[in-house]
Image (cartoon, rainbow, N blue to C red):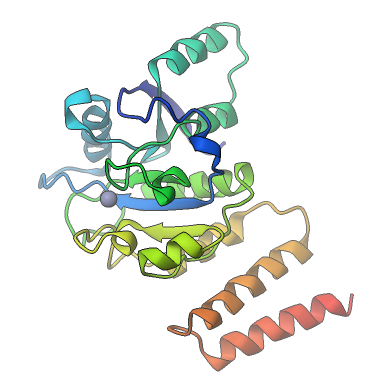
Length: 249
Ligand SMILES: [Zn+2]
């Protein structure tokens, strides 16, 4: 794993949702931390965010917070005790920690339990103000984390979920920004570019074969075309060429 993991207990989870009420994790929701503190570097923004999400009074809930080269995962107190026990016996693995955080639903999309919240994991990304560029090391860590989530949760497709929220509910899986499902939110937003980001995630997903990489790329292109908003004819020709190439093998 290209980053270290810090595990924190939190009360800010739906306690009854140990199986997410039967739902699989299909989506990743990306959030900007937006502390509003000028002069905060990524390290301080990360620490302040972790502190905030540990506090029961904040009512703030997320599965993951990304920092430069590290990821905070939030679990229940009981899980935390169990994980500490595992750590002492030397059996703790990074994957287990990422999975532990995703066991319970976290209300990163609002406090009312809803299908999209329960089907998604939230990632908080250090961004002190609207419009701030993401720190390069944070960005790379985010790519690595998302690569691992795609591997651990096969229903998460490396593609953008179309707007608005009703489209998200109908989608089979993918990535979206908080602003996609809540018009009062602006995170993460420009200059952040989800299309470019997913290209970077896709490029680093260990799929085991070139065929799968190419199929995934073709799939993303076709999906763009189907969303009609950003498709170009050359996207479709590229997708067609990739699929044709695979069919001829
Ligand atoms: Zn948000």
